Image (cartoon, rainbow, N blue to C red):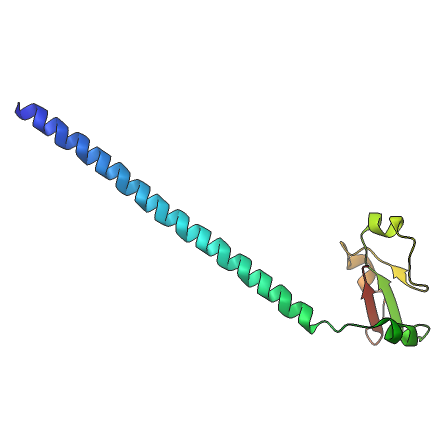
Length: 118
């Protein structure tokens, strides 16, 4: 009989350890999910602040800038969107937005750049 009691305690101890392990894993998963949520929120709010800092240009302002030698209008739509569009700004230069390294150095830094993607 004594042996049966030891076996039950041992079995209960194993179950308790497994439940404790699951709780610990659950806490770790909660911390991981919380971390991912915080990273996502941080990225979201950084995106908003960057958007707020980007000056917008109206159609009328753009018309006034067109033709000026210091203004460079760059179309940064993706390849398919650019090919499918029938509306393009006259005088705009099409550049690949996914790889700016080949073209970023060919423009003088003292120019005024207008980037558009719509």
